Length: 308
Length: 308
Image (cartoon, rainbow over all chains, first blue to last red; front, side):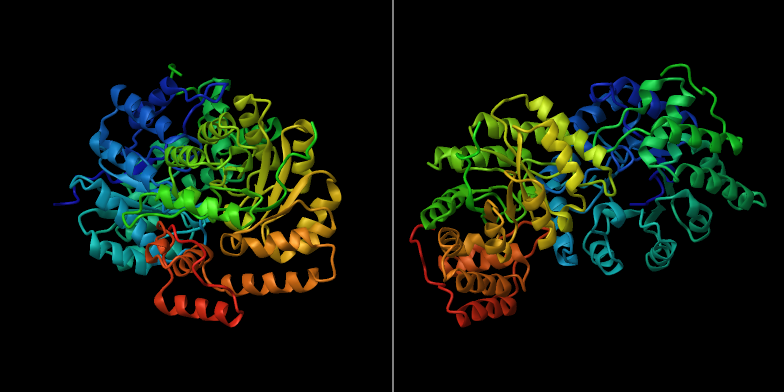
């Protein structure tokens, strides 16, 4: 089976909007996802860290995925996050995603216990693969040690690729360490590696990277898509510098709250900024600093869509 | 309402036995819990870190709690762990425990996101309290930063005690830092502080501590109970040294796997040693080293119960 049909490029870990009472705002979520695709997203890595997915129950995640597909987003651009602490939860979410024909799943390792062995993480993934038992399953490993506290080492990835060459097909590298991304790209040709930050997008594309899966694509996807299309041109470096500067301005603030503040401004919809605890909204001073720094970069904070 | 009726003393974070296929062995779990109470446990802090609770789905946890109560363990000695990453899961588990008349719940903060603010953790607990909305609710905070990556600071505890004086009644301190336990005991008289290790049991009792909630109580509860009863006698220091030595021998190995290996030996039941990934069983060499070091301490590895 060729990997050619998998979405490559910029996949967006779509943020999850909430109502004031913290219930999921399904309608706004579907509208946001459609807007991201209209703006140039190649796919949607829904239910990741930026999506506050671990602040949703498994049932909420399954229901929201169904609303998204019913709402008109094609399942074959979706890579939902499904990795939980408990294997039964991971299996349920993964089976659900596969049964709805999502092109892949983004799988965190079990993240409660720290200092676990590669053997233990391998056994976790193996158990999920065996229980899901579906030839359509495509797993993208989600490597984000700064948040999960555990991750996928190169020797562990090598073992997984040997054991499940048709199933374990890629990885999102949110280590924040370009050397790790580079080592992955060099060690495993054909393995679909997505840096977790667009800061490394051009570097990754030059080494055969699959694109990027970046939080800030929630507000800047068009620029990333353009760089991916024109990475081999003379303007690529300048485009990279521009998106790097936007990212740098945003990541001075807590990421999820900052993105939601920007979306609230873009859509002139104050309710967009609700987050679930333990995250907190940006304070008004931080909000103004963020928006000012983006305005100084001539970042478009206009109102790109009318339906919010 | 007086705090006098709350179980104090040694509460055991009971390990969760599994069948070979990783399904929960409910029968063995009930037998283990009853044995712990027979041996002198004052209560059971089921579904903690040692219980691999985060490797169980919320549904599995609720079902197992029901089996335990149906099996004859009184709910008023139970303090189930209920803190999950997602508020809806925490609320469901907490409501379930309260509705079954458990005397309290042991609540982890949401543990996926790292570097969150005290405001965010406060809002998480507040949201759970408001949604559960039951005057029977008694929360014991579960402070275990080495595993959860987040925890309860003294200023945060002070805020919670002011906001919910009848509800937030205690804390398990698994920081591993005696200075933190001491600071808690000194700052909040009447707040029920349980060190997460019996290494600090005598020190804590001398400062008014509530007892301890310790992993190794799964195999050594009688000795801890005896120290609690005789802490003010001349033999207390020697008793503390003895239980500290046993703990030190066990914690040279991964804790959950080590405890299950000891229980397998005690009960002559090899199947006791099954753990869920990402944990792994002790290898045979480690197992022999562990049992030898306990034998050298004249620790009783006999078969204390026939029904396993």
